[in-house]
Length: 184
Image 1 (cartoon, rainbow, N blue to C red):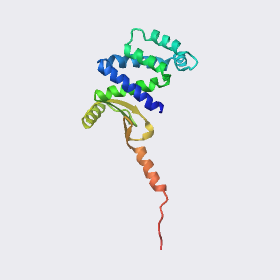
Image 2: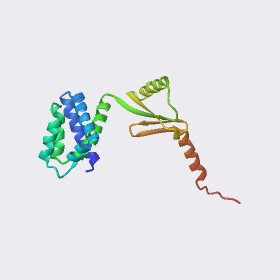
Image 3: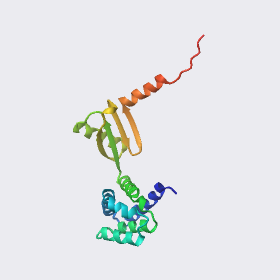
Image 4: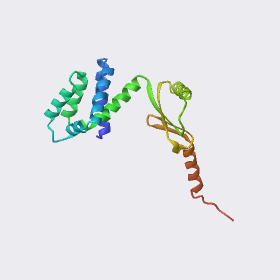
């Protein structure tokens, strides 16, 4: 089984347990804080992901670092150590966040433009997308001058590219593609 599938299984189990105990917010917060600490601390990553460090030492470290945290998160982290799956922590945390957003009807959208967008335009786009998707939209803006004009939308894994750069690339591909013609 690939790490992505395994991470999904663990994230779904944690999400299910958090839902049953009505602790989604607390679990999401504590897991997010721990994942951020792992990303920021090279020493913590080294200890957590090192196969040479004994599981008992890792669990003692986790219990110390998460003292006062939600028991579901503490148990989840210990389970990862017991099953030697520490490397899926960050992916599982990201999947957990996506599950929470899906359950709450929230979708993250990235809007990429060649120039900065005014707040009024941003709000109108957010409202229109929310209405079209029938979800609450969290819109993030990004400026990429290389697209020249138009917009590129990223909604989850899907990209809608209405940029001038994309259209020029398509036109270039059509113009340089070999076309067989019969003459005479």
